[in-house]
Image (tube, rainbow, N blue to C red; front, top):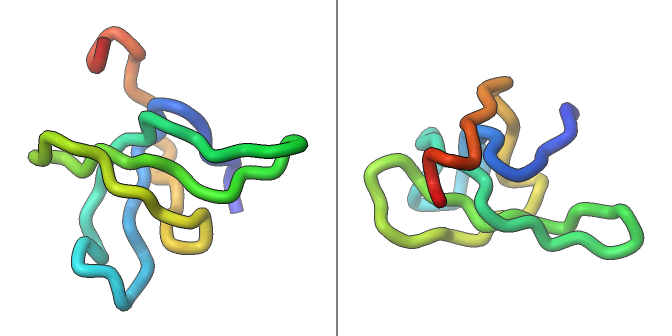
Length: 70
């Protein structure tokens, strides 16, 4: 699995999630002692973030500039 970090585009791959197959951008990372537990993802076309565990998302390789969001 590729490293997931801020502003990376991710695809939701958790089959049981209602947003499965959709893409979004990581705006928050839940991390402790260097281990990432989950991410707050702004799904494209939505106004709020949704939390996903790292097992539910995978990076697409696209990284957006911070200025696109702040």
